[in-house]
Picture 1 (cartoon, rainbow, N blue to C red):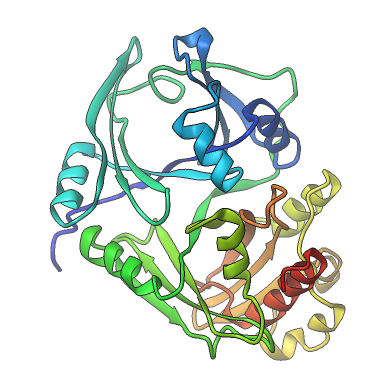
Picture 2 (cartoon, rainbow, N blue to C red):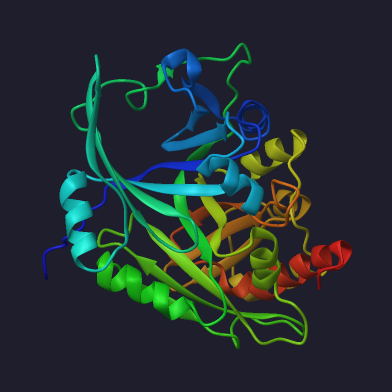
Length: 364
């Protein structure tokens, strides 16, 4: 087996550029059960932005707002609305990761730099991927602080109430017409990922919309990036709608793992998170489609959770509605019971649910 030139230990953090980080942080604390852990801003010597780092399980979200009207952050929000700027990757050697990927054709965003404070040092370096999205390599083995130098520990008066979110399962990117293979090649050639699975418009189409998707994964399987592009359909696909409103390619959804999806989702619903809905008939022949499952069917049906099976087991999944006013970024909650796949058997029901929402927005 050839040496993996880009060993990745997992997702380090996901950073959103948002219009109002203070208020977004409150949403993720109350609705998703994240805990406020760290803050950077004017009080910590960073004059142009405010960033809040929230954590639950192994997931770190960073929410950043500009304090200036004409910054890169403000421009990102003006163009895209609230959206993902950085998918940060936890590595043992950020400099090597940067050098290996740029020499293979990655476009450099920021050269390796080592930032320090009293808790040690972190080396970071960034490359461009699809749209305005970045991958930042983070080496934090010589650091004992709460997050990164420049951040201070910060807690909230709001008591933390986690809902069982464990780690990032996968992150999905939407790219423009005919761009999927270009980005699959990027992950394969530049980052050494493998092509895991391919869906074409025969796998993923409804009467109206179609799309193509390929899933790439790094060597150890800790990082999985499905890449979607639109395909010709009778009406506008959800990928086109996303690209129209996001004004380009970007992160479509973040899938987060839980060990008890019924508990996690019922708690999210209680806190006001809205989910896409599939019709009740979906459950009529569930067992014929997926066989026996360990869970009781009633709470699955009540919470409108989808089930799919592959050769290695089954999975349970559900998708939120977009979490900002533009129909762009949303979340998937997923519980894997052996299955390694992405719920292909649910695509049709799911996309019809998305189309019903698109129709309400007048964008189908």
